[in-house]
Amino acid sequence: MTDLTLATEAALAAGNLLRQHFGSVAVVDEATHHDIKLALDKESQHLITDILLGNRPGDALYGEEGLAGNQQSPRQWIVDPIDGTVNFFYGIPHFCVSIALRVAGEIVVGVIHDPMVGETWTVEKGGPALLNGRPIHASTRDTLDQSILFVGCGKDEEALHIGIQRFHKASLRARKIRMMGSAALGMAYIACGRLDAYIEDHISLWDIAAGLLLVTTAGGKVDLTEVAGHPDVWSIVASNNRIPLEEIL
Image (tube, rainbow, N blue to C red; front, side, top):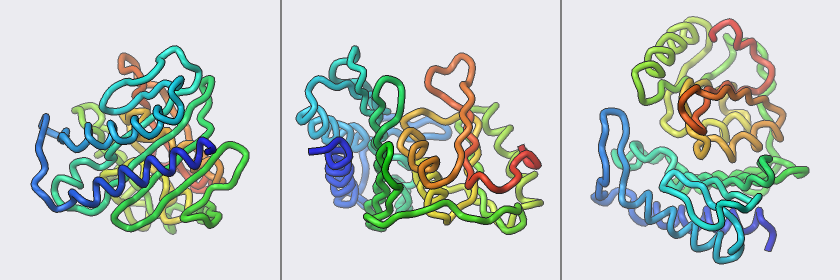
């Protein structure tokens, strides 16, 4: 079984679990002002871990819900078991499972699965970006007034402030602005031409790892800047590599 096939199998299995529980009362493990952690987050990651490390026992796994496997391995699975947990909790059917494989520091496999819509984006290094097995490409729109942008606001005061400023600037220039609640799906939507850019000041690696390879393979561009004092937290500007985002950053 290839790494891409394995990652897809794990994402589909986790997606099936989430779909079965969607609309039910969810157990909250932790709630903060701008975020929620569910028991189902952990259950989904455990399921993914069992599938991935059951087939690749020497690998490492780095997920939103913790570490597993051999952390000295050059092969590291990067997992977000529910990207869009708040959406899930509130009954909004916009969330996904995101799985990437990083080998010697380079992302080589990415899978993003939306279990409610039944869409699965897949990519591996050297191959095409696919949606449900069909090739996809970023949009060809090249002006802001034609574009739809996803502007995220993060979860802390600084990121919220920056996000709101960007939202205001972008809203005056773009056709439409969206705050969607799932970074991974936002990047998947850029890869298949539904959105033209995604901008956020503080985002975790597991949210964007699979989307990074997907967007760049589909003809887009992703710029990441490390956030000082926050390991594996990034400022991200992802786009179709055509629209002039300098005007709103």
